[in-house]
Image 1 (cartoon, rainbow, N blue to C red):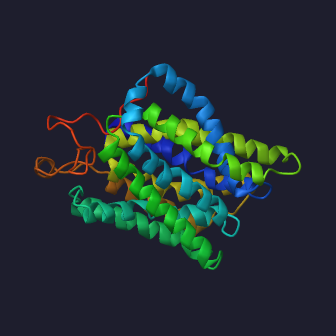
Image 2 (cartoon, rainbow, N blue to C red; image 1 turned 180 degrees about the vertical axis):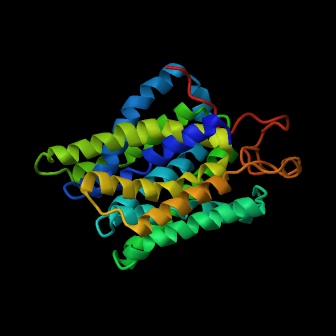
Length: 321
């Protein structure tokens, strides 16, 4: 993986590693629809003017159907399920379950006939990372209801499907426009439920800070980084950052909440990070030359009328601002 890829990978691991803690703080005082509405609205308010100014709105109109589908499986369903689950699960447990995304993504890719060739080294990395998640999850398996765990697993499925939609059906849509309009759609969808569950009193400063950070940092900034990461390294490698998210969640607990740093946690850090390195390792030259499509290569599921010449990147970079 390139140096830029590693930088995006590390940043994404943090940006989507801390929301579990922030959501846990927010749902203590406000409703689930309010959390999702605030997060998506703040993100849209930042990104939508930039997207409109950058133009390319015709591309957005031509791809409105897959954009709606992407929004549904990446934001509308998952963010509500995630927030609801954290009423009964710890933030670290939620992050641990989300780490199943890379494995689910590989399975779904193979079922749809568009999998990257994964050599023994990368398979070993995925399994080592999963083992690290298991070591970290062990002490928490007794907490949380089966319903909440099921909600988070549905979120993991949605997070695995969304990048496949982006690479197969939205490869012509710039990352800025994709993120901005997805957030705007989600904000409109949750306006009614948020009004119906509006808090009777102003939330405390701690909750407000969590909501603002969720919207501006973990949503507006994170979505741009997310699409750039997928464009740079492909879907399967890019989604491995979800293995690092639990480590980030635990680190946040140790630093911000004074939670103990045990030997089990340290061992899981080594396994998760080591597995991530192996799972994102370059293929050998022979494997790289094999005539199989990379994650960013169009598939038969592309929109009708797609050309057969060399494809553009899965997601184009956001214009300079």
